[in-house]
Every structure is written in structure tokens, then in C-alpha cells.
Amino acid sequence: MSGTYCGKSCTECTQKEVLSCPGCKVGPGRTFGGDCELAQCCQKKGHESCETCSFKENCGILRMCHQQPEIRKKKMELQQNRSQEMIEKAPFLGKWLWILFWMFVPSAIASILSNENIAGFAPGIYLFGEVLAAISALAYGLVLLKLSSQERQYRTAGFCSVVSSVLSILVMIIVSVTETLILPLSVTIPLLVIALIGQYFEFNAHATTLYQYRVDYEQAEKWKILWKWNIGCMIALICSILVVLILPILGLLALFVVAIATIVVGIMKLVYLYKTAMIFRGLALDCDR
Image (tube, rainbow, N blue to C red):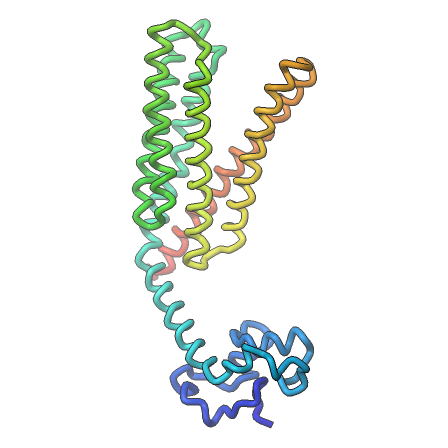
């Protein structure tokens, strides 16, 4: 018996010393944490080795068994390079994602001050809230653009946030000049589309960054799922508005439910952003030790 799954002899392996391999079934072929595809295949099918598999004659993986040590070597080198990249980039990502998280403070204040209920009795405060909201969106976009040096999807997200803030300022000017509170669809629809595009690329950028450096696959998946909830809320909002035109009471009830769901999604985004920032801040601290 060779002690391997594929039947190869460990003593003839040219990469054994280079990889510091203790042997197939102890090292790359071990049940948990092994990185040999042949071993994983045998374990999945319940075989002690490839010899007992009825598909061995046509198995493409088995035909590449002599190349497996070299493939493992390249994987290890790639992982080492990624680890080095992570050491260099973790402090930057941790810092700017943390700043991005704390941007919620001015945004939350702006949201309260720009509430339509305040516009009636305190127009000055309402206007300040609108300006603060636009400035917060602009600052948020600039931070995303700063992060684009590490992940290009942040660039699109940042650009959309900056454009959205500029358009918001133009809308405020139009409203002050025309003294109207109802904006035309030609203004609201582009703002909505730009915001959605920005959110899509931001959520994906967070997920991609976590995937790219293999730091937290679970959190990356959560970002993907949250985007689906986000777009779901937007579709539900549009449908609820249409229902209001036909069945006012039912439509208003649907709008109330959508509003709650949107708030929940917003809170979850804040939680995920906090967790993502803390992941990289923690890695940065580990690298400094």
C-alpha cells in the first residue's frame, strides 16, 4: 500500500520536502482541512483509494495526480501573497470602513431635521437638515471613493453617492425658487435609480473585499442577501404606491409595512458595516503584534 488515495508513492514525490508534507492521508488528504481534490472525492464516495472507484479510468482529476503537488505549491504561494496583501491593506480598510460606519451620525441627524413635519413650523431647521443630508451623502461618497483604491466597485458606489448629493442640492434650489413641494418624476426617478446603483455596488464591494482576502465568507454572504432585501423593499414600495391609487386603505397599510422593512434593512446595513469594519480593524491589530 502506498498510503495515498491515488496510488502514488510519497517517496518519489519531488515536492515532499518543499511542501513539508507528512504524507497524503496525514497532510493534504486528511479528512478535515485537507486540500487534495482526489482525497476529497474518495472521502465523499466512501472509497479508501481511487482503485475501488468505477470511474477511475475516465477521471480527469486522477489523470492529473502527478501535478497535484505542484498545484498545491502554487495555492500555498497564492495564499502567502494574499496574506501579505492583507497585512498591508487591513489597516487602511479598517480605518476607512470605520469612518464610513460613523457617517451614520450626521445622516441620522439630517434625516430627523429634514422631516416634513418640521418644515411647517421650523423651515430654517428643515432647510439645514436638507443641506446636512446632501453634505453627508457627499462625504459618504468621498469615503467610498477613497476605498476604491482597494476595490474598484467602491468607485462606482462613491460616484453615485456624489452625483446623488449634487442632484439633491440642485433639487433644493429648484424647490426654493419654484416654491413647490412636489417634484416631477423626471427628477425623482433618476435620483432613485442612481441611489439603487450606488447601493448595489457598495454592498457588492463590501462582500467582494471580504471574499477577496478570505477573511469572512459568512459576512460576505450576508451583504449579498441584504442587497436582495434592499431591492425587494424598493419594489414593494413602488407596488404599494400603485395600490394606494386603487385601494387607498390597503395601499397605506402596505406602505406602513414597507417603511418598517426599509428601517430594518437600514439598521442591518449599519450592523454589517460595523462588523465589516471591526473585522479589518481586528486583522490590523493582529498584524501589529
